[in-house]
Length: 404
Ligand code: HEM
Image (cartoon, rainbow, N blue to C red; front, side, top):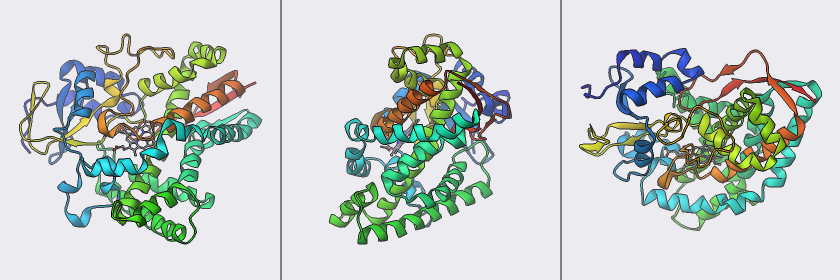
């Protein structure tokens, strides 16, 4: 591997690999932005990629049609999985076709219909936490809320959901490219194969007995013609499932932790529930669940903010850093639930802008409504553990104590 001129320093590289980076990456991001906002990060002898850390270049790169997201074109056909054939990893026109097939199911209006069920779930989940004076916010609230919602949307029966949790966690283990090992990669591939097998069985069942869930609807599209082949259908279901598991969970966890660390903001929110909408946007900006967008690939000799990239170079837009760029957000390290404007990049930009954004926003808003109503006082207890993943930022454990 040849090393490009704009490469991160050895000190910064070491910081990127440290345990401290998992706890809080924001100081390292600041150093990156100040040293070289577009820099090559050589993660191993064979593999490295570009990080884009400043807001202006990041926002442009997410929309830049010179970059490709097509992984299939870069893989041996035997290695291509259903998820690789999902919209997240395709370019137009395939991307446009796949996205259109589900976009109607995710408009703000369609999603708003789920509000009563989401509010009911939030209330149910708070019962044991209230009764016990606290518990683990992640396993008892942040995780089951979005996981139940997406499982119900897709029609995955209750007894099967725990298995999905495990598969999904193993699948995203591979996305943390600061700790790439063959074992992690193999576990991810196995998990993906299990998810695909599960969905194959579910599809067979729904074909006999459609239920009106999203799986049945997509199956109708598939059966109606050649617009969605079997691999694409599996890819779509896997993508929706994984996206529903690994993102909103961390929005709720990271956001609630930020509110607990800023009691003044928690009080403001309790006093004025109308702030919930802008509070959710600030939660997304301040500690973004997806810290780095999925890879884009450079064309030959691309000039990106004055840096020359080579053909096929992998590029990671560092959303977590862009969201703290002082050139875009005044006083960026301040957590301000009424921040305006707040054009964060937590859901990406351009044609791959998060399809599930209306759902994630609704879930977070209703979660905040329930939490502020139930818990005038809550504090984070001992034993907080971050997940060891630098791409999907979240907590493994977030113990809380509740006062009524
Ligand atoms: C707080 C929660 C969420 C965050 C922060 C988030 C973040 C993102 C980001 C950053 C992207 C763009 C990736 C890129 O351009 O490389 C994306 C795409 C996507 N997200 Fe989300 N997401 C969230 C929740 C969800 C949910 C709940 C769903 C589905 C139920 C979902 C479905 C998708 C899909 C299907 C795409 C691909 C869209 C495309 O390629 O056109 N997301 N998400």
